[in-house]
Length: 490
Image (tube, rainbow, N blue to C red; front, side):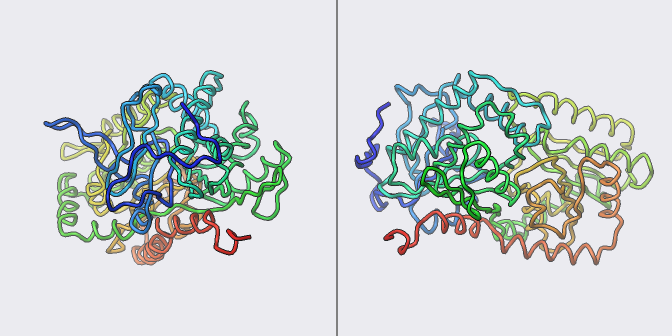
């Protein structure tokens, strides 16, 4: 694949569509494109992917011209890629070809078998394989080369997440004219864990190719500054890291959601009717507990089911009037640890139902399937208590969506102290997910506690979720990434 020299003008893949700027002012680089192929009678078509990063950047799409570099999700030949650039919903999309072997090594392997467990406190033992690392390097280089080719001169490039940690440095070498930002959506671990990584210096140097590196919490940002000094001899000046004459700003930018959109859906009469129907389908229980997660060993699904069983055994929760609904969205089935997690969760749900369900209904309603946003919001409205218990989580946007859906302030949020969201959502019922007894007490309090106090706490949470929404997150990060006119002329 040819790569332009830094001084060469960018070469667009093809002319832009009429009425759209030829030179987008923001280039987003992420592992996946924000669209997916959907088969139809006349062949497959593209549609916007639900949720995720594209929803968080909706305000940016409305106010500026944006292009996106990412993988389409289908195996491709880098020498003869099947897809060229195209436009969808106002975003110029630039596919990056990735072979099936590269996907297995870079994504299933290094990203989700090495970095994911390591960055989540080694809950599942990370694996370190040289061939995974080589695949990761190859894919990161291809992303950097593709971005270098399509980015306009002086553009702001915003790179996202742990699958692409080498891209900032690689892109900096190809295109020093760009303003480069990187945001890590997952936690950045303590240095004692990070230093286990055989390729720790290369990843750290990769991130320092950016002008701005962002984290969900101040803990993550502090951890990163420490490792830059220890591994690379960088100088830490306040929130900045200085190395080899280059300054990288290291900041904290907690991700938000489109809270107004969730609230509109929650207030829709169709959603209200669907929420009532869900409760009827569940046997009209007095209390509905809800968990919504990707099926992942970091999410603490087993511990919440264990706590629920303890409450049932002690008679603190009545199975005749209470049901626990657990949505476990399929995720990364081929990555290490996921099959074991699914088997464990399904065994626990079945065991609880076998011991405590009555003829009228199940004690646990377990669904191993994804739900669209409208159905999720109806579930949020139907639930009396939301139980979010990750052992470690960068943020956890489900907690924020649940709060935004509480238009009547009737719900209670139980939230792990080790979710990034806990740094903002202090009025939730905060729990230590490693303390099963403490979690039992928290669920008991949520179900049987003072409803007026819970409503006051929910009102505070709702205000915070609307204040710190996705638009403010994007504006904050991009405000630091894009130089001011004064800085640009300096």
